[in-house]
Length: 258
Ligand code: ADE
Image 1 (cartoon, rainbow, N blue to C red):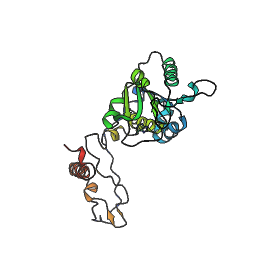
Image 2 (image 1 turned 180 degrees about the horizontal axis):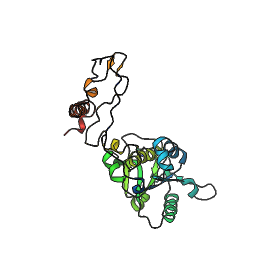
Image 3 (image 1 turned 180 degrees about the vertical axis):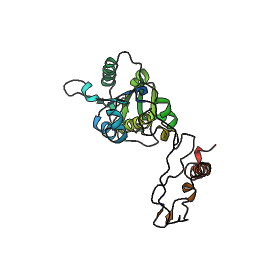
Image 4 (image 1 turned 120 degrees about the horizontal axis):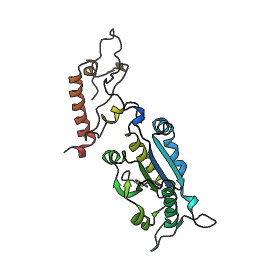
């Protein structure tokens, strides 16, 4: 609950807090992560990764993103990529040949790399912050995105290291899911966030939701910033944040508590 106590209006507006003493690693230590995405809808994946922090990470060489159009590996004059499911049922299934060919192509582009191959699917293991942390140090990831009813399972059996779902709902295709995963993974790499500490002190990093944040003005529409945040007492602020973290987790995500 937001505190309602107004601070002294005569006092100067307090500065939003800063956290001293946590320097980012020097630029020379920062290696780019290569990520190849294979999808029928390259634009859906490219767009969210072209702006803001991820756009800057790409320009700075921290993310080396290559999005490949699966259609280019399609069969015959019509570049066919899908077919009817064996055994019947609705929709179309992606054939294995174009995906095998696309993956061969990507592997040929970087023969010395040992990439981990991920398949974005609602049938996969659920993506979370722990998995993002696990994938962030990998030098090279390849993401395969399906569309329509899915992908011929032989691709999964032969080529895929892990199947990943971004949540218990079904999207029209995996390109958006790939963009979500890439954003969550790449922001954890050194140098991508302006302040590397913000990736450490955030929701899920200690198994709890984050405490609420406030900035200027100290009072807005009769709602005051909790006075403890203006106190300059770092011990009390840390204790307040911990308590708020626990309370928010209890209310919104009790499943995260032991
Ligand atoms: N493709 C469609 N829905 C998906 C989901 N929830 N996660 C990953 N890939 C998907």
